[in-house]
Image 1 (cartoon, rainbow, N blue to C red):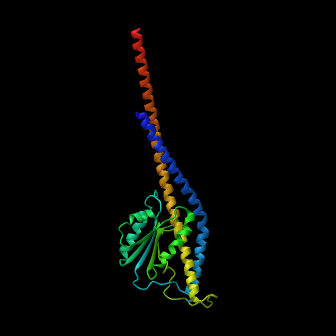
Image 2: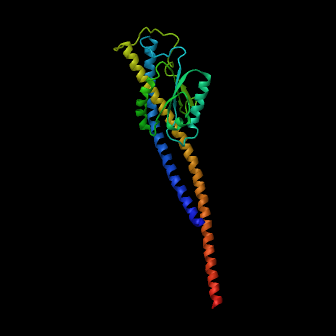
Image 3: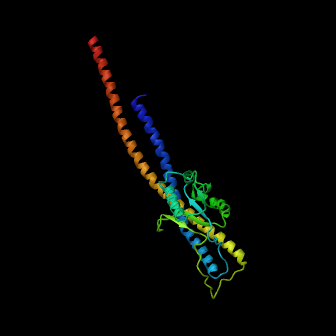
Length: 278
């Protein structure tokens, strides 16, 4: 195979890679558009549920489940299902290691996303790996499947670790869902809310809605950050590929020129030999 043929094969392979990466970039752009549209109403829903929960808690009508003193910790790490998103998963693992070192003791860990799960191979506290979202539309189904797994860790002090949005003070957020709204003392309201359910039913229902709201928010923020990092990573990779393709094309022109020159030399040599023979 000539050098030019080999170069053409390499160029074709790089163009195929570029096509795949460009498709991944476009997918991230589409997901970012979906996530941006749902984020505001989602934040509003989470705020309403949290305010309702705070109101019934502060009036003493209902309470969230409370981990007992010295309870073991349960960590939920939201990583990525797919790659090409820079140090997305490493940032979550670094925060997890820091937090676990600050609060030593028995713990369990559940990871979301195969990419972060692969990095936890050999982790003794790992209780399982759940498939993460590849598209925004997959998030509700993943949360629905996650709820029974969370129920397995009742009695633990829950800690959710996930990427936050650009408007949050920390790029990686650590959230304690069971103690977030807890206050040292209940505030007895002069006008407690009227309820039609029993306190137990109200507590269970509100907690379920609260959990759904904060998980939906956590997954959305995480997937938003993941796709932003992937888009940034893809842009850098595509720029590098374009530069490589430009260099290959330039080199191809040079090789083609060399081949043409060699062919001309052969023709001229052949013609000169015929003329001498004549």
